[in-house]
Image (cartoon, rainbow, N blue to C red; front, side, top):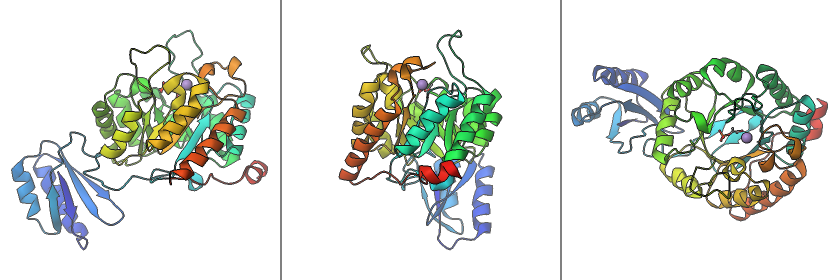
Length: 351
Ligand code: PEP
Ligand code: MN
């Protein structure tokens, strides 16, 4: 249930509602919106609980949440969630952003070339993997902490927030220390302990949809993060496994449009993993704008032929710049122009 507090309720009245929820064996979680405060009552709610709480002082109304995912549902939180990052970057709320950079951080030179290239082309957030979930244990596994440090330094130098994947509970602390956003990869969408630990850091979390995750399972997975009192969750559609083998995955545009309707969380599209082919990244980015994506996570490598992972789906910085230009025109044409990117390259690079 959602308990909507009156505009002039007192902190004591909110505490009393929380305590009553505890008496009922429920978990009370306050959600402070721009205008209203609501308290979500999580657990096995019965009609008696709703009736009793609706009579308490300071309570405006009690709403039954029909969806199994409570905190991520638009029923609980009708306005879009906006995740605020460093350097004035915001994700959600109608102005799309680009997250871009290499699949894997390989060397300082490779990372710097990719990052300066995407910055120049108007990206907002830098991406780069230091822990890589590879199908084969013999493939490049990522640089680990030295890679995290390289990404953090690039972000610092260029005045941009950074995102990187956390593969395991073992690495949550290090990833939270060096990254602005913790990425949970497709293979870990239902690693519930990892979701809770990432949520507990208080850092924004980008939750990718699992290779075979249904939309309901994906939204339920987001609850594991949100229920740690961490409202800063972004969802990422990165393609699902279907019978089709001509592309690496099938980027589910239905899911982007549907999840925007079901949930208030920002939805990011990943046309790189969604297609597996660099020349499909531009058309699927444009298509994702049309269906309402709040942003894009795109793989960029200065020399895709020599990439240690995902070269076939990586854009060169020049291809990224060309794609970004077209995406900006389309987004402006449909009335949802891209957000301003943080700071100009010249100022940041010489600072
Ligand atoms: C990645 O972003 O490089 C990655 C491994 O993504 P996914 O979890 O979507 O496969
Ligand atoms: Mn990749």
